[in-house]
Image (tube, rainbow, N blue to C red; front, side, top):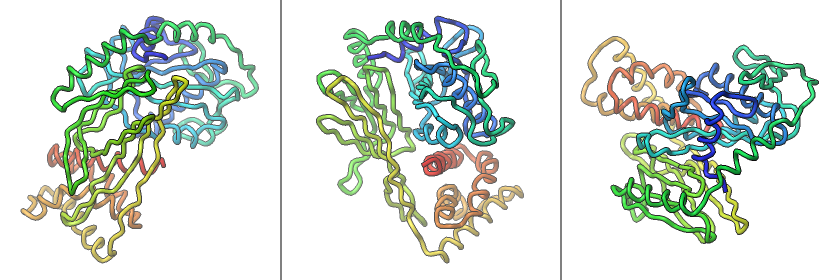
Length: 377
């Protein structure tokens, strides 16, 4: 079993990027340019490594390999993005790997790319890259190449050696459990052993609502591979455990006029097998709540009036100060109830909400994250 923290260190020991791994300070797939560049690198690494895994390490300084970390990346639908834009897409997995010296909210992103032994190309135009383009690695650079280029297997033995040097052992596992228990004393950390091999640690802030238990600020770590799942203070999840699985359901707290309910958003299941293997699968559960259109029209117009006031530098009244906290979520509800123009209103509200105060801006970011998850599904 590969210890992903050791794997990252072994990859960085090669110092310079090459044809089987790349390193980035950060990526931004919320913007078209960042999305295009990410897809280009995935395409190039897949084509250059038909017989072995290739990797992208994110959160590392380019000059000296200093591990600085990035924010936790919660887009579990990254494979959907790959499938939408690439022909013959590889299997791509993004994992958040904690490092002891980083702040609790920082991790190193590890993208693992497994080719399918076919030429991967762009399916359609994106940014300045044209549909049909094929990329390969030329040293540390992802370059466009001729479509009929011969794929050569030159890295398998080297990558195999790196992965073998990153194998887990009992010392790393025990140290990982102890580190987790010590670092999360604030929220009653627990652990569970699955299939006599895998160790999962978790901790979170507990809340009981109408006999249902929810958690926020949840850390879940698969110790054997140093893979971390994280849900922020803005998230609310339920946790259930069976003999061979660890199950998390994330909920959305949505509603109108302070009448809020919990709606299942997404289920993540970590399944453990008898052959010392595991799988992390996610499934979208979300069905948007439906409301009376007359009520939504009123709320939609009220949201627009609040944004107009902020745009013109006018002060909000007491009611509007309360309503602005619900504005991102209610724009989202309007959009999910077939108010297509509400989406553009939501995007355009970013500057004014960010300038208003941090609490409202964090609620805005949470709403965009929900939208992104639903959209990619």
